[in-house]
Length: 166
Image (cartoon, rainbow, N blue to C red):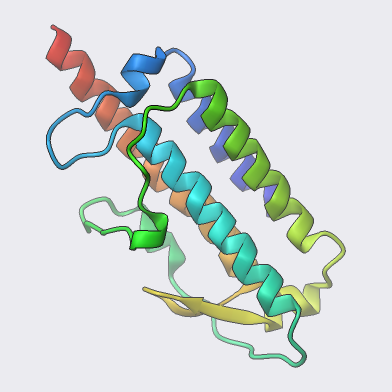
């Protein structure tokens, strides 16, 4: 489970490491996010997931649910609007700052399920605003799909800012 989400994270970081801090923070067009904002959004989403996991694990009992089609998140033809608590600040951030945040959120995610039984991962669930009730295991997988979706967005932003220069 973690191997897949870790590979996606590595692809995200590899994709942005060649950018200057100015390029990271450049907004490709009005109403769009910069690469830095996308990275901050990934951090916010992962920390939000950790909060949900910890709260869910603190409760007794199970609330099992069926598997949801979370892979659909990869379809970028379906536009999504981030909720306020997952909307990036828009302040200038360096790659170093953003990598620190992403490392912190990933470490928090790993710690949140360290030692958690398969039974708890499968049978303890909490609400996702689009998919409804997701098991903790599906939430962890969703982090990877979410980052993969935004990796495509990062590539689009890089192309747009490159085209602005040329």
